[in-house]
Image (tube, rainbow, N blue to C red):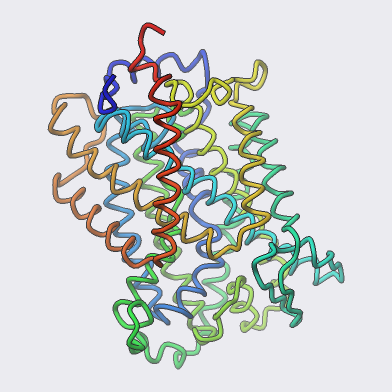
Length: 483
């Protein structure tokens, strides 16, 4: 049995054509773009923008967004080619299986847990912060023990400081509700997501339009604060470190590819969904960051988990503050919805390949969804959302995603070499320049992340390697066809 054995493209296409026996094809190109926008605009924009400005880039956080977007664009072009060739659930995991072999597919599938599952947990924590602000406006105060994890300090807008609680119950609540919704069906989930996307894009546009005339240009001086002598603390290295931080804000366009098996016309819809959502969000991000750092001096965002609300308070439109928070909550909800769906589809595919127990590919007889996987991640994601600080989660998600992007860029070059004549309804332009540029930028962003992120990545991947050799390799359907 070879751990480098690749899964034939013909087998993957057969699996796609059999989708009526499993997942239902219900998503249009428009729904796929909304799915991408739904996953992208969320915690990264509304929470991490302030952190990146205060700790790394200052007003030049707009340049951090552009740098991160360029890296995502190169990776997105590679994703789009794969998604049009191999319209099967599983995202980068499936693409790696076809190009680099089973072991690398396992590595990337295991790595995607960091992106989707912990991404959902990260957003769940931010969701709970904004919910507390909304409840406080109406004089509703939840017990301090149940609104944050034991290892973090929470500062509310009224000045209250909470030094560690027992568990973050609001975060657990929202993760649980969305997991149960996903069990009901993709179409129902997509309908809710489409509505939430409209709401939060409207809020971002309102923020930009109304906030623009209140910009204080003195807040842009200096635009690129001088480096403190420490790598990543302002200056050009700070812009790079800021890009590594706000990179989390772009996570989501690749989640479109996990829904390939539920797309009505994946060859056309996948590239449109991936690249369309990325372009829309990049434009909104740059304008949003420009307005936010113009309204408030970047130093004031230090330790602020709700910078959008802080900035908007400067406009004088106090009556819109509550609407802003409600819309941000809606935005966070759609992000978690897409990430939880993406994670369940990756594990569903890995289980179909025998690398995970059959439990994870069990389809509900009525709803035609991988309901047991949804229940598993309800518990798994809830534990992280309830107990782990948001900053630790955010860095783990970013480094896991960047690794996935690197492998997808490598995969496109391998596939062009091994299968140059395979049908592609979308071709990545300027190969090998685009994938190589994607690899370099993503590795540079990984380098800019804290050492703790690298340590956690190594530990997580080591655990994955053990599971593969103990279970996955022995039960692989590709390596054990007789079974």
